[in-house]
Amino acid sequence: MQLLLSQLAEDYPEDRVYREFLGKSHYEMSGKLNDLKKYSEAIVASKHAFSIRSQLANESPAIEKYQADCATNLNVIAVILENLNKNSEALDSYRQGREYIEKLLRNKPENQLYKRILTINLMNSSDLLKEDKSRMECYDTVIALLEPVMRENPKNQNDSKTIYRGYRQRARLFHKMGRYLESANDWKSALEWCTPQNRAYIQKQIEITTEKAKNAKSSFDKPLVAPRPRKKKSVNSGETKSFVSALK
Image (tube, rainbow, N blue to C red; front, side, top):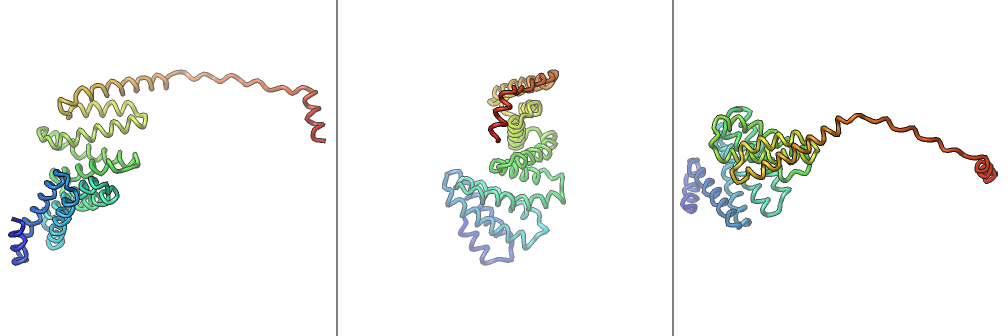
């Protein structure tokens, strides 16, 4: 099939449809190869797909689908690069993908597809970030973008997984920072979106963080005790004389 599409795209370069399908074919193949853990082959296929799709996007910037395809493709390239332990390159790929999708969202801020692409990008890239502040910004954005979408369509399982991950990871980060009350609140929100298999684990985390929040509040509420005045050390005359004579 790819050989036929390649030939058609070569014979009719002015017809974007053949190139669009060829790019999609390479993209889908890269996903299959990644699932089979053939990462070296997967990255070649995925980059080939992006080469075709980015060319289409540059030729026809008004066609939003081409821009969105590039963003999705870059997310997949980043995932494969992670599997190849090339985290620095993966982060760069995620960054490029965000540039495509954020531009689309500025023009259509309510578009749910664009929100989904961005939130997946942020959740995946957050695992590679070292600074807590940067990770927190990712989780905040994911939750702010996706929660309204989930209220409208709560049955979307992929969105449920993403927002669950957002609350779970932010809860863990709050806990690490000693912000136990906020951590407990996020665990409670995660409970709303988790699968039945995870409910017991989430409920346990709620208990742990709620108890820590209570203990932290109790410690904070304890009245301060004024420190006892320190006794001044006395120096007897003999010691003083000895010290003075030592300086002579």
